[in-house]
Image (tube, rainbow, N blue to C red):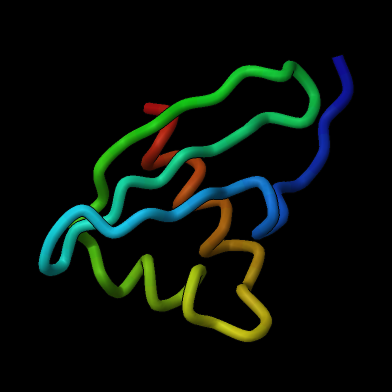
Length: 67
């Protein structure tokens, strides 16, 4: 299995309430997806709302969703 670093396009964000986002991660390698409701707005701001999201924050978001 090959590995690819996550891109912001691998994530889908939908607002579900005040300070809550339902985030889905689509794995381009396996074709699977994972969904979790995230209430950590600093993580959302550093990924969804950033012009150039940093790789470490994308990895944090991916880990939060998958595990």
